[in-house]
Length: 392
Ligand SMILES: Cc1cc2nc3c(=O)[nH]c(=O)nc-3n(C[C@H](O)[C@H](O)[C@H](O)COP(=O)(O)OP(=O)(O)OC[C@H]3O[C@@H](n4cnc5c(N)ncnc54)[C@H](O)[C@@H]3O)c2cc1C
Image (cartoon, rainbow, N blue to C red; front, side):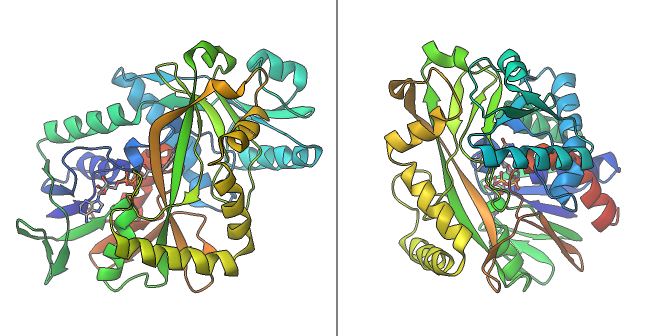
């Protein structure tokens, strides 16, 4: 039996690939009662175009193909999609060079992107601000992540080859069996696709001891409906290429709602969506790790200082208004949308891990650091993972 731990987009797309290769007897264990409770259901819903990532990365390798496959999937099934493209704007003269670097990365990844002047930007996004130049890609699209997850669950169930056990967490393993609070399941092959908990599961198999997840909290604000016409598609700032986060941006969702966000401030738990963290013990251990990173890693310190300012509405507004003309402070209203990005840290070097990590040990496979754009890349990445690491 193949056991997959986690029914997020990573686990579901890997299961689809196994089914495509004729495997039956696949069991997916998901600790929550439904899909989409964590990153796969709490993201910006953007199908990225592969313009950001360092050319030798798995992110760069799978973004364009993943974008194409996901669009195809969504269209075949009649799920919502907005193909509006995206602009990246420069707020300062020195950011123009980064636009050209993004263009080089886009070309290297086989994506489509062009540098445009202010006049052309005005035709694409009439209210976007920039300094002289901007980058435009037509490949970016926005989807509804939950509808995709639900559709994949239905499809996998209908195949008759996959069984789901919702509300059942992988709690440990012994002698070739996965143990949950209800039962024990013998496995021929085990796949860890547990998102924010994937490091713990890998550690329980004595793997990746130096790799730890630090959670970052992404909060959003919403644009008042009366102002949603200010954004047609996606308006992003020039990113800090040393950071895995893309900066607060505007995205118009499939229902026309415009969100500004997400932030990326250290969270106190892997599932710290509300005001209080889930566990004081975990919060203390995360605070300790954040403090060590704060003193040992200057870019981490710089980002943390900038991110905390975004909790001050005036600062968040100024940051957002640097991308958009006609935005008033009262146009940004609180939103309940919040997600946690489980970012992997190499504890030996105290560096954030920038790419996805895949570890195989015997008949177990572990997907770590499936951070953004892992929703976009998922279908192409899953194909490669199964080809490369799973004997079917
Ligand atoms: C705020 C935010 C914005 C983002 N924006 C984008 C975007 O616009 N575009 C994009 O491509 N990507 C985006 N991402 C990234 C993307 O959402 C994630 O990379 C992707 O969803 C990761 O999927 P996953 O299946 O690996 O993890 P998850 O979605 O977290 O799924 C893991 C699943 O495993 C389950 N699980 C955990 N532990 C256990 C256990 N012990 N037993 C059983 N089940 C378990 C969890 O309940 C969960 O359902 C964003 C992420 C965030 C947080």
